[in-house]
Length: 38
Length: 195
Image 1 (tube, each protein chain N blue to C red):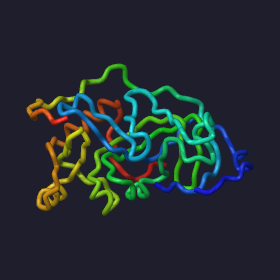
Image 2: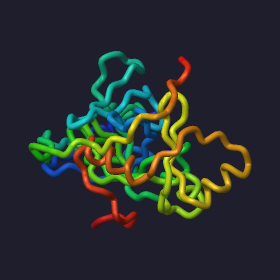
Image 3: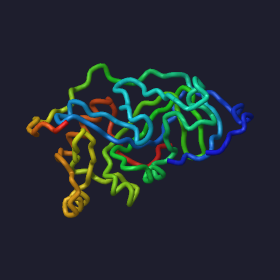
Image 4: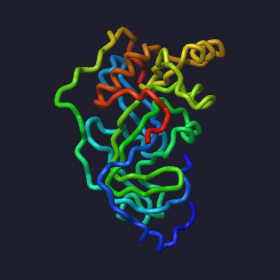
């Protein structure tokens, strides 16, 4: 990925991530596949 | 990228809002989708942390230089627009990413010190490469080792016709939902850059 030549430096104060307190667990798919080698 | 005159480093400014840019990732996950992770297309191959910022690191000399270095290639890469990402190698996920900390602005993108995905969607890499749109994925081919390859219906059919080993097929909707829940982000609905 070519993003070209650098132009300038920007200093951005660290931010906290806007994450919700609780989230639903990812939906799981029944594990019926045979075990993989290795 | 050529040698950077040291004087250019003086062109700096400060800001408060993270920069929003575009990025692609590869994808890996467990069979039951209990663990779905974004991985960089290039670089160290470490998964992006979940609900914690990714932080850039660099092993190139000089040791212990500030990351991202102005004259280095290190940092979390992202582009101003999605179109240049069509040329990335086998992307599985297209999305926007927030960058902050020390950020090097480039002609066509950025290199950031910290980053976290903001909006994500699965991308059929063949659709994205051909048309610049991620395509409506129907399945995700999970290969041995956990690598996940989202595919649209027509490209799945083409892959099967030409003997491409797709591995186990998972419903794309389930994989995408697991990805969004894991990183606690929303789906990317449009590939038109936001202003």
